[in-house]
Length: 215
Ligand code: 3PG
Image (tube, rainbow, N blue to C red):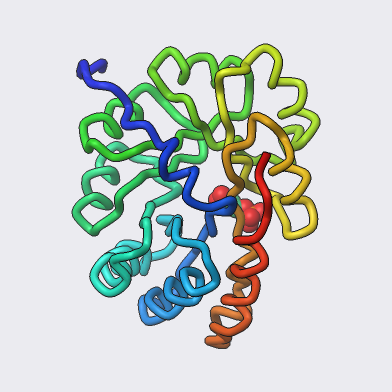
């Protein structure tokens, strides 16, 4: 399955903001105002998860109307989805875990790739494939800050984006770790605020998140 090209590195995208909002969009009409509120708050990197029927249309709408967003597609589980999201305007791809087939699909699509890992062996397997930044998912359930601290000595050259159970309260502690590139989370776009069209609330949450310091 090795197609002879490298994984496109996601380091530069991960460096753009301390927090990647993880967005599950139920109504396409919410996509653009939601993206605008997050950008206005200072979070330019967005991950739209492919968990709803509206997700691909939401990607298209944000790509067309909020071109300053660094737009990623997440929850990619199938090879064919890489091409689909690239055509919809996504400029990076995120997976909750990973397989050799998904690595090959990311390479073939030429999309910067944030593959998911939960164990040291999974991280080592992806490092062999050329990944240097990985999503640590589900961070809270898989060992959280203690795991990341313990992994830093043996996996010193790798950086992680912990996601899953990251909150406004614990994000500063994750971001203080030397092997954390950025964190991902849904707390900056609460379901109720999106449903109510409370874009001011989302902008305020994004503004607070954008000020978080990394090591
Ligand atoms: C993800 O898909 O990355 C997570 O579901 C986000 O997790 P959170 O809702 O705990 O932030």
